Each structure stands twice: as C-alpha cells, then as structure tokens.
Image (cartoon, rainbow, N blue to C red; front, side):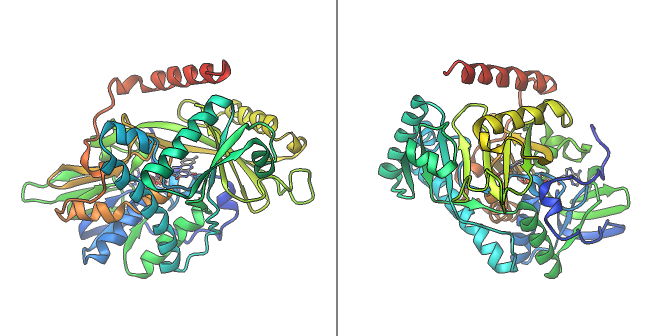
Length: 434
Ligand SMILES: Cc1cc2nc3c(=O)[nH]c(=O)nc-3n(C[C@H](O)[C@H](O)[C@H](O)COP(=O)(O)OP(=O)(O)OC[C@H]3O[C@@H](n4cnc5c(N)ncnc54)[C@H](O)[C@@H]3O)c2cc1C
C-alpha cells in the first residue's frame, strides 16, 4: 500500500471552474448489494448506470472525493482512439477486428453525447475533433499513410490531411509541417462531466459513497464477498474493480495492481488569454497532439490554453516536470511569453503491455475494467455497457477489449526503472529526429 485514502483534493483548473462539490457521503454501517463497484471514476459510474438499467442493485465505493482520480483531472479530450492503431490491429488480428474496434471508438464518442443529454449535463462539450500535428516530414508521411488506410479500408471519411500553411492557421504555431484532422470527438470539461454523471445516477437512487476506501475484499465460503471499509461493510454477490491506475491505493485491488503500469501525465493551464497576444491561438477549439514519441498535447478551455505531457517520474509532482512543460509550451507558442501559468497538476494513466484497455473476469465473483493507456474519457464512460454483460454472464461484444487476457506486467517491482529507460530512449529518438 503506497498511500492512505481519503487523499486531499486536486487543485486543477477543472476544480476551480466547477460548482463546489456536494458534501461527501461515506459509507457507514453494513449494507447489501448485488454488485459492489470499487472506484468511482467514469468506469465505475458507467458500470453502475448499465447494471442499474438491467435491474441490478449496485453500490459504488470511491476511496476519495468523487472525481479525485483521473476522471476528474484529465485533459478532457474526447477521442475514440486506442494507443494501438487500427491498421496495426488489422495486421495483428484481422480487418473485422480492426473495424469492430473502430466502431467501438465511435460508439464511445457518441455515448458521451447520449450521457450529456440523458442527465442534462452542461460540461462545455465541443464536438470539434482533433488534430495530429506532424513535427517532421517522416511523421507527416506516416499520418498520410494512416489517413489513406482509414479512408480506403474502414471507409472513415472524417479524417483528412492538412498542409503546413493550414496547420499554422489552425494552431498559431509554425512548428508543424502538416497534420491529420479527425472530425470525430472533441473536448469537454472532464470534472463537470463526471459530477453530472454522479449526480444523475444518485437522482436515480443509485448509491454512490465517496471517502469510502475498500481496504479488503473477503471471499465468503457460503458465496459472495464482504468488502471491508473503515466505516462499515458491504455484502455483495459480485465485485467490479474499476480502480485503473490507482489500483495500488489499498490491498483490495491487489489482484489487478500488477497488470497495469501507472504513468504520470501532467498538465499546465495559462491565465485567460483574452486581450493578449495568445488570444487567437487554437481558434477552432479542437484537441491537438504532436507526433513526437514523448507526445505533448494542447487545447483551449474557455480562453485559457492547456498544455500537457509526461509528468515527473515517481509518486508525486515535481516542479522540474512542470517547468519542462512550460518551456515546451513557450517554444511552441512564443506568443505566450510573459503569460502566467495559473494551474499545474498531474495524475496517473494506466498503461498495459499490449497498449489496449481490458475488461474481464478474474473468478466467479470478480470482474475488472481498466488500462485505457491515457485515452479513457469516452471509452471508460462507455465501457460499463460491456462490463454489465460480463457481470451478468453474457459475452461482451467489446472486440479485443473483452477477448484478450490482461497479463501481469513482468518485473513489476522495478517498473519505474523500466518506464524511465523507455521514456529516456524515446526522448533521445525525438531529439535526434528519429
Ligand atoms: C493528467 C491526465 C490527463 C488525461 N487526459 C485524457 C484525455 O484528454 N482524454 C482521455 O480520453 N483520457 C485522458 N486521460 C485518461 C482518463 O482520464 C482515464 O482513462 C479515465 O479517467 C479512467 O477512468 P477510471 O474510472 O477507470 O479511473 P479513475 O478515474 O482514475 O478512477 C479510479 C478510482 O478508483 C478509486 N480507488 C482506487 N482504489 C480504491 C479502493 N480500494 N476503494 C475505493 N476506491 C478506490 C480511486 O480513488 C479513483 O478515483 C488522462 C489522464 C490523466 C491522469
């Protein structure tokens, strides 16, 4: 165990631009449920929604305040992408598999719109698409090939290639020799989205307890499980582990902890840019990612610019990692010289060995869903539909997500060294233009 929840709130731009959180509702005493869900991020909430819609009595248990995990502090990029590309999926498996995974990505994006409508959530959603920004000609060639493959093989005509001049107009930066526009998806205020989901589910009578860390899960000889918490106990027939990159918070998710590698992702946000030289940047309001291996990304939220990338290694933030992000932002956007950075925060994303998210069953009483590899806003808020099928003993129609095992990461105890080595190698390749 590395930490002792409940943990303090995260001082992000999102927290400062949302209504104050409702009072916490810790679990006290003993309660019963058909299914107990451990983790109250998008995965936990989407699973609760889907199970409740099928008549299952659920309870969600979140260790910290609601939205404390990645779901409340991410970049708000709504995307249907996986870390593993669709063409690569077709190569490794077959074209039907790639097509189903592409469909799942689109379904997940569309589901964001469904949830906003269903619960009447205003989360500043802009379906403005995303732009991949090529930092050198070879990267643009790769984007061109990917774009052609998506259009010709999967019939996806929402993607197109932009030339250098269009990139300068789109981004306000002269750094890019071209890019790939993808009109699927957009940007959202992730914490407003999360809060709206939680509130909507509570209004339906679904029990969601925050500041309620599950410290131990006990399998009962007579069937079912007991979940132990500091304030009480839950008796359930099944458990869903929805703890993603925070699976080492307590021993309750020890059975999945070593199947994902937590990787720190950091973000900074500027002061409002209205009336400054940075005002006109990113005028189309999309999300933007670089093609570098150690990818950096940016977007606007209101009239602020958000800039993200790799965070510090280790257990917490470091001023050096934020300073590196700030330097990169200024190099890319010299117009921001003299502009104040008002917010700096980070969180953990869950990487998997095969670069894919997974859902599956550990045994007759435990199901899990996790491993979004940094792209879970749309997918985690959608995956509950498939997790519910898994819980109810049906075969999820979730493509590779529900078919492949989620193996233990080799050499897990020295994972930080491995992550440093890989990141260092990627930085070297980026620096020498490979
Ligand atoms: C800085 C950052 C930027 C990102 N940007 C993007 C982006 O722009 N677009 C995108 O698609 N994805 C992005 N992601 C990834 C995305 O946020 C995640 O994939 C997604 O939120 C995962 O949701 P989740 O519910 O599975 O996990 P989380 O939201 O992390 O929820 C897991 C929860 O489990 C709780 N928990 C753990 N152990 C216990 C226990 N024992 N008892 C009770 N509760 C427990 C934790 O407190 C935590 O709240 C980003 C992530 C980070 C960190």
